[in-house]
Image (cartoon, rainbow, N blue to C red):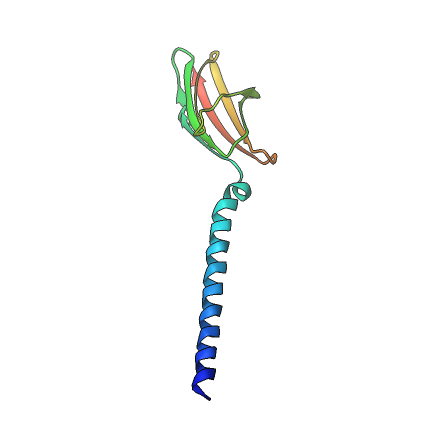
Length: 120
């Protein structure tokens, strides 16, 4: 093998590695940017705690819905901040109530969370 052939082969190998690295970086970047489209919405409820008791019937509702186009509590819309945080205060009658939260993304995928509360 001549010196010119070795040099040409070395350049070709280096080019292949460079192209491979660029493709790998591009695929990683694309995966990071596509994740919100693939992941669907997430919903976390900070308040009320599960099975909480409220003596006066006034319930503070707080949480966060990420990647959600719409959020409802018992079929009533809840407003969210830009980061997905929400807070509201509702009054419930005496007895047990089940609160149903539903977050829906722009593709129609939903996630549901429930909280049972009691007002004596």
